[in-house]
Length: 131
Image (cartoon, rainbow, N blue to C red; front, side, top):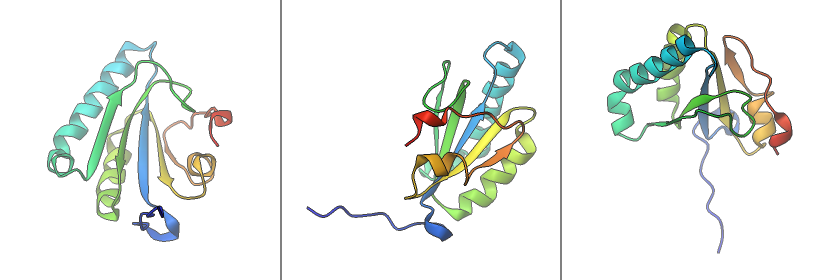
């Protein structure tokens, strides 16, 4: 059986974007802000989430994968959401670090590093966990 590939939704072979919002688990105020930011996003983008245009993932209490500290994630697949969601994060992220990276056929390492955008302080990813 032949694998059917998705058609990239953006230029340059980008299929979708992930947004990782990091918070320091030793800071109660940062955790509170991060929880409130996630709730604000869910409220502000309720219609797009219900339509499946934005997926909001769980609130991680321990670091996972290449992420050096705890975070929560959002992903989306259309330029129309990009132009709404990225400016929203620019204005609302406060002092939290936010990684915005594409999903391409070039692999996780390039997607999370060379192709990445950062808001706030750039976190040093555990790149050995990326292939």
